[in-house]
Length: 397
Ligand SMILES: [Zn+2]
Image 1 (cartoon, rainbow, N blue to C red):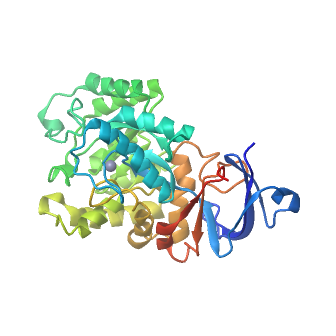
Image 2 (image 1 turned 90 degrees about the horizontal axis):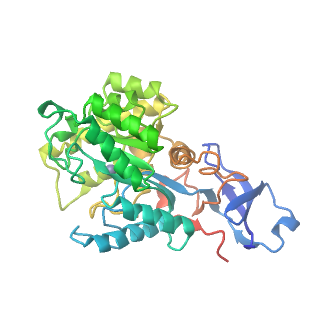
Image 3 (image 1 turned 135 degrees about the vertical axis):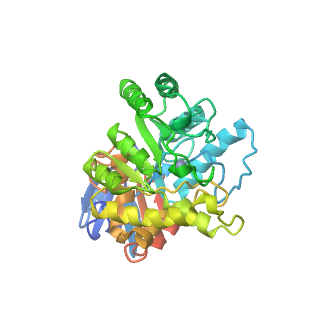
């Protein structure tokens, strides 16, 4: 049996948003078994003891919009010309970097090599490669569907609806054993200028995707900047909604009305990176300033109305590499009006709910998985400390 680990004398932030309290935490195998003001001698006997004096213990962070396949990390910069074999290895590499930067779970926002992502999920969960717990995703279904990541189609007004084709896409992705299938309900101005406001799918197509997803037991995720795309996602029961940038009053009311079942990832990290990327100053058609201004107002409103927003900022580009993901928590505070405790709750308790593991992930609680971070100092005082968090590996001795 694995040796137990006792983390003693730390302040414990449990993930609910409550103030940290001084406590000792005992871990056996993969799970937390006891939390006490002071662990008794019998509990500590034989355990590896980690002294957390001056540190804060918190649940491992969860990225709600992760792209392990974009190629770049803080340790490797990609020009995106690698072979598919190298790209598959880079998915595993990105998982290791993400884990080292404090993120013990990741909810994928799409991968052009979904079968490789499914393989990474298995390797991480079985422990023969280091990486986060992973919800694997399809590639991003655009209206082309046959071409991964194809954003070049004009929009719903200029083509015939194809609900059968969209349902087939969901089935094909489900056959690969992904957890979630992503549809780009509107475009992406940072890729094709101006397209964020263009609807790419019809109502009948999203209805067909939704029916296929229910049939196959996979979740749907929507890339949705445009207000019509957001309301369409909510109407069809899509569970995770990315960006929500240009939500109007109707879209905000739709999200608020569905707040018990939807998660929104407003994705500030990549916007920040676009604003601060010295190599690629934003061009007008990319709508970077408009996106930043709008998402700040929308996310602040959604927060105040009780919608669960989760961090995750499209990390993985060379100008926004994986490893910097904790920046999203700082932006939740600086841009969206979160307190540090609320931002941490979004990345832990709400992340656990997003992963579909609310009863065992995202809290420091007896019986929960021991995905734990130890941070020197008090991240509630300085959320930037998370950039220097240390993951605890309770089963290593
Ligand atoms: Zn994304």
